[in-house]
Amino acid sequence: MSVILQRLGLGGVVRNKTISSINKAFRKPNTIYAIAMLVMAAVYSGFLCTKGLPLSEGWYTEYAWRINHGDVPYRDFSLLFPSLYAYLISFITSLFGYDLIVLRIFGVIVFCLEALAILNIFRLLFAEPYCFAAAVLAVLFEHAGVVDIIFYDYLYVMNLYVYVYIYLCISLLVKSFSPTRKAAYETLAGFFLGLIVISKQSTGIMLLAFSLIYIIVYRIIQKQSKIPVFEICGFVFPIALFLVWLAATNSLGEFYKACFVNAVAAKGGLFSELFAWIINGRYYIPFGFCFALPLFLFSTQRTGASNAGKWLAGKMHFVVAILFSMSFLLLLFLLYIKSGFADSASRMLDDNLILFFVFGFTTLVFVASVINVIRMQRSTECRANVDDLAFIFLFGCEFVISWACGMS
Image 1 (tube, helix red, strand yellow):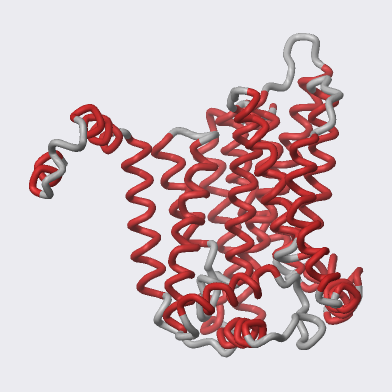
Image 2: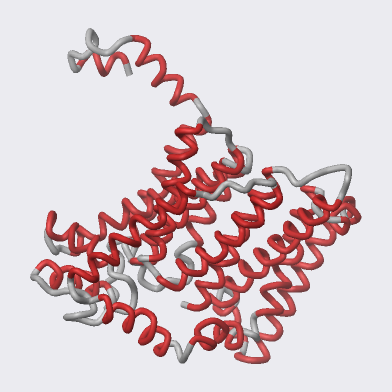
């Protein structure tokens, strides 16, 4: 590093202390893992972002073109989700043009930021090597089952907001901050929650409902009565700006009709939107939970979170191997009966099966974590600590997001 700076004629400008601190930073495991994650994400998304041309890709450019030429969403053209994303794309295209490669490069940037956000979430709760491995798998499986990946799709931009929101909230739970920095984190957490609501209304409202319940329960457990002023201000700010813009463009009524009437009607009504994915996927539910159960038992015995886990501590590898093998063979057999052998192998990785596996594991861990905290609160010997409450928040958010994915 110092040789490069001297070659550039900066040796006398940059202090040795700065160079030494940079060198030390690059020797730290967290910096090394962050660089590795960025390289992996950039190569993966950079390679795949030019390998498809889905019909839906033109939608976002069309929205942007119309906005840049004076049209207003809802009033002049149809849109079934809040228009924050459409305005973001219109801003980018107004600066860099309408070539598809522009938005695809933007998608690579979004994907890299998602990867870093996921890594930083896991760093708050797990050791460095494990959080890196888990983050790599999470990033890769985020796009599992997608035929043509659009890395800049509004869902993935919303995912970035979700990850930043989760990171900020868990940081507030497990770290100690000065009053000023804590206020900044709380304000930003509320701000990103507001961005989620005005990016995709169904996911945002569900995450908002869970967050409100969590805040109330957390403050009861911690015996806090202070109103979360900074979170509320941060949340209200983007929502208020969005509503003022809608009112100023005479599109507030059309927005409500499009996003809360037509969007629900397009899914067959509110009940259908909330629960049809479970009814339609009922065939996969037993197998999703069957695959999730051994992993759940293994995780609980490692953390001592359940009596069942403690009882199985000496037999866990045997139990996991047997349950996974039985689940796999049973699923393969039933798929063979239903669709024949030629179809069975490809359907093993059906999107519904992956969704219900994630949903099953998340549900089991979330419920177990809640029960564990309740048990600890009733005990006179111990109380729930911040790690327990942080895990409840993480898996609660994942439960809500899994449900929202099913609704989509």
